Structure formats: structure tokens, C-alpha cells
Amino acid sequence: MGKIAVIGGSGLYSMPGLEVVAEKEIETPFGDPSAPIIVGRFGNQEVIFLARHGIGHHISPTEVNYRANIYALKSLGAETILGISACGSLREDFAPGDIVIPDQLFDFTRDRARSFFTGGLVAHVNVANPFCSGLMESVYQAVKLTTDAVHKGGAYITIEGPRFSTRAESNTYRAWGMSIIGMTTSPEAFLAREAEMCYATISHVTDYDVWHVSEKPVTVDMVVEVLNRNTSLVRQAVKNLISDLPEDRECECQNAMADAFITDPEMIPEDTRQRLHLLVNKYLD
Image (cartoon, rainbow, N blue to C red):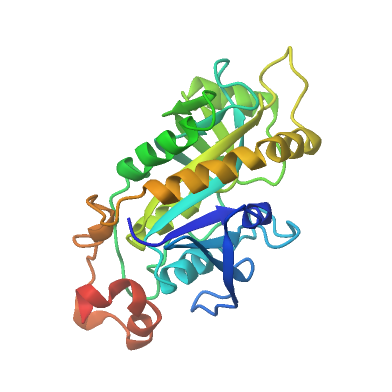
């Protein structure tokens, strides 16, 4: 699946066997990414790391520049993205400490830029299945080599944050059939699809949100405790994934935009063509 990028916390960089090759400051047409990008190497496989919330976790979920992050990774040649995130469970059988590899996504955010395609170029990308199925399976197998407490499938609802849910909200999401809840996977997954990159996520269950009346409501301390406990697990899972990724992509992600553009090419402003050249050159040149 080509060069892989990992979006998560900065603690992932200190993996045994990872050789840090470079730290890159990338400028994009959409602004600056969340942090300098770390380029490393496991054996012959190059891997790229980006701290989603910045070094020291100083960027809120709403303020993350998702477009700049995805564009920067694309510009460095990444074809595959693994997102690492914390989540709350909306199901009894997804317990704190478990790992979930979701297969569906519900975007309940309000204040985020959701598409690269603005300013005179309209595109309607197909995201019926928002995660790459091949990458999901590879991620599941990689995690399963490290723990049996992993679940494949489930619907991830992304809320705006940064506050946690009310009980009324949490119970509503459960009634809608959602499995886990978090604050960052939308629009990250959709932008990855627009950039024709494979995307899947490892979601750490840190709590039962606030619907579970027999459990304490979620707190920051709960989230941090589980993330710290699972750090070594995720590092090993990433190593497993990197060593097992196929060299070539056979999924549809690499051509996701082939039938997405509706704007007459002659009507696309030149500055928009230049701004989006990395994403559209193979279709518009």
C-alpha cells in the first residue's frame, strides 16, 4: 500500500527499531499542519508520523487543520494513513481498554472544513464505505497479534467537542445505532478519500461515555490513563502493520476521484487549479 503515515500522539515516535530520518516543516495551500512531520524508517519501509493535536496536545479537535495535515502527508508521498484516536464506547460489549477498528462513520461536527474542493471546483466523492476495507483488515490483523481485546466493525460518530456529551446526547447516539464516539475522525477520513489515500483508524476505548449509569462519567484522567496503558500495544501494532502491508494497492481508494468532478474544466479558476494541483493533476492536466 505504499508509504504509510500515522496520525496520532507524539508518543508513537519512540518505537524500538524506528530510525528517525528527518523532521520536516511543510507549508501547504491550506496552511500549516499541526506539527513538524517526522519521517522515519523501519528496515526498508519508510513511515511518516504527525501529531494531530500538535506537540504537547495544544490544538483542540475543532482547531485541527485537517486539510493541511492530509495535504502535507500526500505531498510527502504517503498513500496510506493510519489514524490513532481515543473514543468512548456506546455499547456494553466495547469495554474500556478495548480496541475498535470501525467500518462506518457518522459526521456530527459543525464547524470544520470538510473538503479540499472549494473556490470554483466542485467534487462529489463516494464515501459510502468511508474506511479502506483492505487496510481495515490489515490493521485488525496487526492489532490482533498484540491483543484479543479488539473488535472489527462498528459505527464511529464524530462530535464537535471539545466538551464531552450530555447523557441525553449519549443515549440518542446509542438509539441511532452508533458504536463509539470521538472528536477527530471526521473530516480526516473524508479528506483522505478526496486525496485518494487509504485510511483506517485504531480507536482506543477509554470509557463508556456518560450513558452507562453504573460507571463514572468520562474524564480527561480516564482518557489519558487508557492511552498511556495502550501506548506500547499500539506501537507494536503499527510495527506489525508496517511489516505486513502489501507493496501495491488493489483497492478503489487510489482512483476515488475519477468520477467525482462535476465542474466544466474550462470554468475552473487558474488559482484553484494551482492550489489543488497535487490532488487533481492526473485528471485535469
